[in-house]
Image (cartoon, rainbow, N blue to C red):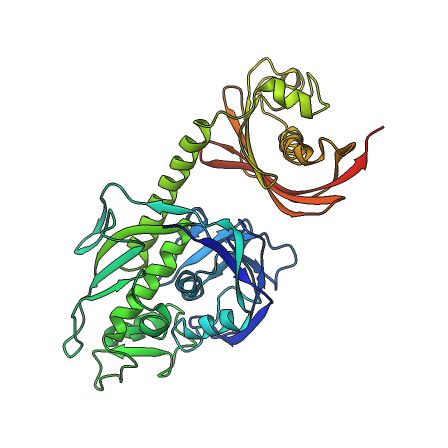
Length: 430
């Protein structure tokens, strides 16, 4: 079962105190084009990079989920991501005024309300789906996370907890195909065991915690529950938020035994790797376009034609191409000849040529030529050497009759080596 991606109709905002730092933080969520995903931006940093909400950007942390990209990081993202998962909001720009999102009332409900206030709308692109076919198991001591092929449609979670005396440890089952996230999961607050409170404060955590946003389990007074089995429902909330980092709707059955962020995040990384492997296999099996087709649409020729094959094209929205890098490349003779390394600017040129191929298909009978106009948000993340196959992926963000903006990145295997946002002008061919 597939669905269309969704974003917001308009921006929405929220302000609150960060659960661990105790600082007042503002969050603004803005609509984003299909295929963008959830991308965090640190509004308080002058040169903050985009931080996509993907498992590859996870950073080691205590009792929360932290994402890092370059010099930017953002923590406590799991409650917002759980709200996005539960409300099926896939594409967002999230601007945060600090290093940690607000803890609000300790649940995802305020984030659900923020998304609803922005007006959730459907987009044209189909949402990615990762359907599990084989069991996957992660263990750490007496905790365990098991992912199994689905027994129905969507994601089904069975969480089995362990709590201090006086807190009901009955398992809770949540099935995305039949249960209501907003009603059953979103309002469940975070919790801490009574014996952990002092240690957390000594570690500089929990400065923004209070009786309203954090339940204390095992203390002198039992907390009043908002919903039955609230602590367990919050553990499911955290799990859904962490698994949102896979970047696709997950169709699977999950059995969680006392698992927390560590196992959740480890499984998110594993499943994200599986998704990327499936996408590589799917693309390579496509017939695609050979070099003759490429040369028919592009004016470039050897030694400046940097695409060997286009293996996938989806309308005028997305394309995937390949550049097989060999020691015979003419640029290796002068660019670090004793340790050959493909110049970053030529990686960008290869990406720009694939963008040109994608867009030129639309311009083929208009008498117009696609010309690179500007480059933004350039990042080089790794080297490309002889023997590598440079995989080029480009996706149109915006397009009009005379302009287009395209998100592009190059990969070697799963590793991203270069990325940029490229803008093009459509000009009359002479």
